[in-house]
Image (cartoon, rainbow, N blue to C red):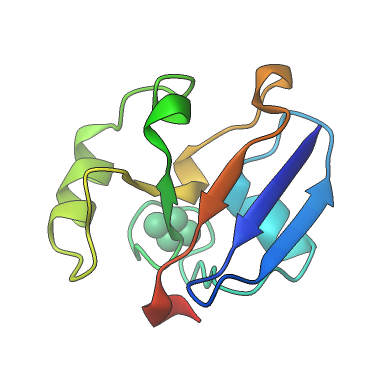
Length: 105
Ligand code: FES
């Protein structure tokens, strides 16, 4: 499947991946700019923050309470905010585009 990470300054970083990994794992493996992922996927650092367009929001599981709590404390939180380590890619995510916040640039 093809997914695209867009940085705060508008740079598009498209990648082709097999489903099964999280958006954070893919970003780390491919050296995507804009995702830091300090905790390595433990849902505790919130440096893997991404914005997922509303149309795609519903294709992912609802955020767990730990994820929602972390997002609440982010300065750049928006209604579309998610933590990418909690977003596992499936076949239906072909064409997905997510944006990363300026603070993780
Ligand atoms: Fe730390 Fe997602 S990688 S919360």
